[in-house]
Length: 177
Image 1 (cartoon, rainbow, N blue to C red):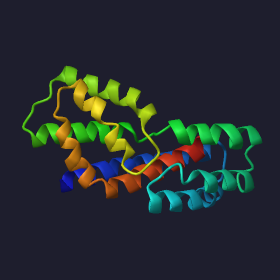
Image 2 (image 1 turned 30 degrees about the vertical axis):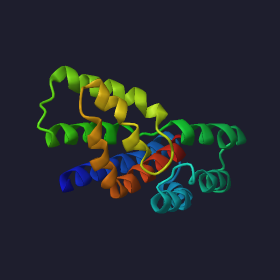
Image 3 (image 1 turned 120 degrees about the vertical axis):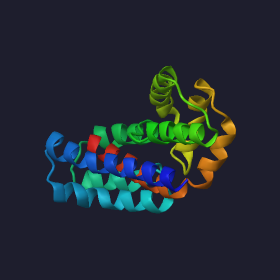
Image 4 (image 1 turned 180 degrees about the vertical axis):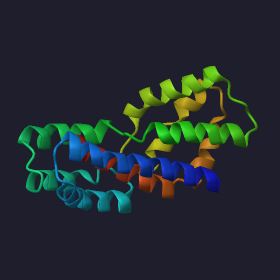
């Protein structure tokens, strides 16, 4: 279980770090400016584990510090926060691997491909609430024949990974704006 928490949190942290170059190079925003604009929404994400709760400070900072156009602030940021979760496949795939290992099930290459495809498709259905990423993993488990009961174990230890997952999602949405 400790390995699951460390791997899951670490992958989400790497995705979080990867969003900064996207904003700096893709959006031509200075690193310091992007960091300062992201911090209030990141603080809400880190403490609440809810990307939707992080939307108001993200919109406010994007308007005030990043000077994003109203079309982005009023439509694209809320749309992104509601639907785009860059980290969504992480709990689905890592969780499915953990459950397979826990139950002593060997996954075949076709099952691995099915997990990837299903997790990407299911990523658009993840609710922006604490633990939403793990709950949305149920279709992935079903697609590869893994026991759904394993979700209970993942939910029990999801607090720390969810902190990193939500913070990375929020930062990715701000950088995409």
